[in-house]
Length: 86
Ligand code: HEM
Image 1 (tube, helix red, strand yellow):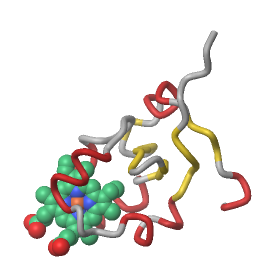
Image 2 (image 1 turned 45 degrees about the horizontal axis):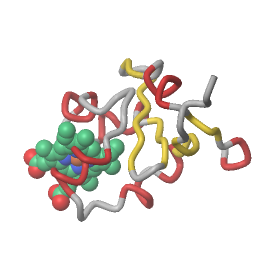
Image 3 (image 1 turned 30 degrees about the vertical axis):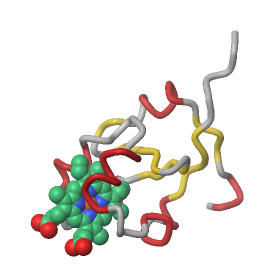
C-alpha cells in the first residue's frame, strides 16, 4: 500500500526480474509490473525487457504518451535511489 513505499536501489531492483516478481523503474518511480503483464497491449515479452532495471528510456521510446503514473498507481512500490556509499 501507499503507506509502505520503499527506497529502491538499482541492486534491489535487479532482484525483481522474473515474471512472477517483475519490477521496473520509470521516471524515478518503481512499479511491480507482475499484475499488469497479461494486460499490456504490447505483450508480456516487451514488458519483461525492462524487468529489474530502469525502463524509463525504452518506455519513452515506445509510448511517451502513455501515463504510467496513472495506469500503474496501484502497483507503485517506491522510489529509485542511488546505491548507498560504502
Ligand atoms: C503498447 C502500457 C512498457 C512496448 C502499450 C499501450 C499501453 C502500454 C497502454 C497501448 C498504447 C496505445 O495504443 O496508444 C505500458 C505500460 C508500461 C509499458 C504501463 C510500463 C510498465 C513497455 C515497454 C515496452 C513496451 C518497456 C518495450 C520494451 C509496447 C509496444 C506497444 C505497447 C510495442 C504497441 C502494441 C501494439 O499496438 O501492437 N503499452 N507499456 N511497453 N507497448 Fe507498452
